[in-house]
Length: 98
Ligand code: FES
Image 1 (tube, protein in one colour):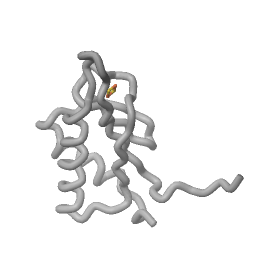
Image 2: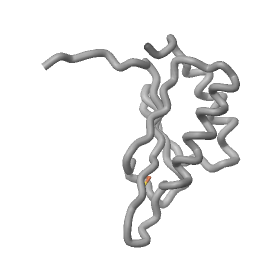
Image 3: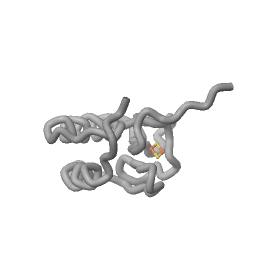
């Protein structure tokens, strides 16, 4: 087994999971959030934060859920929060991903 460092020191996991049977889930809202955040970071030249689509993060009744690691925090993010989250991510940005 070879252990390798992650390509980015900072990662933001965005739940894009679709749960079946009418159970609340992030799904399309998560995918839209991911695209909006990536567009914001690209537009502002922010490097060093990787946005990662993820499976269920366990808080399905909230708006799309994101987890930032580090610092290992989570929050629900609505469309009105994209600019504020992007500002936080700018502050998190480390070395460019490689
Ligand atoms: S479906 Fe997103 S947290 Fe469960």
